Image (cartoon, rainbow, N blue to C red; front, side, top):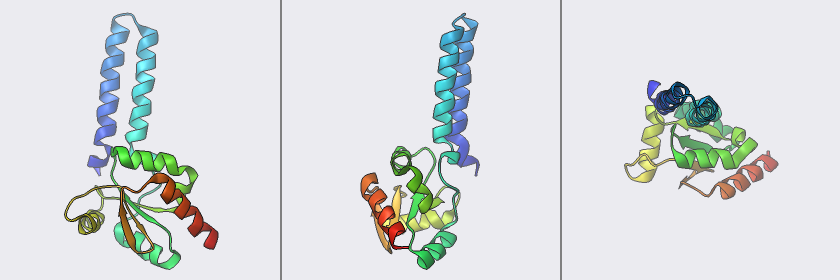
Length: 148
């Protein structure tokens, strides 16, 4: 679990150091701006930016019942961040599995990618896609939502 927050912690520490240095040299306005930038970065890198994660077994069971998309992700992954941002509100219509907090999720990704933990790995209708185009996935999620 702590691994999921590692990048967030690093961003917060770096922000505090940079802002503290700027405050100490009298650049309070620049220090405040830098601190806000690092706080924003920390928020984006945190697991809180993503919908609540399920474990792989729960996601697979629920997806089998209602046909929703499963997204395997990990904190700090720039492609996962891009996917999450581009999906917008539609991200809530998918099941998200954090592979750093769920060994079964990591194993599912390795099975699809030939042994790597390449994310985002997405399962749509039982078919897996590694790092799909966010627009394509958004359209698929919307189409699945219209069916249900």
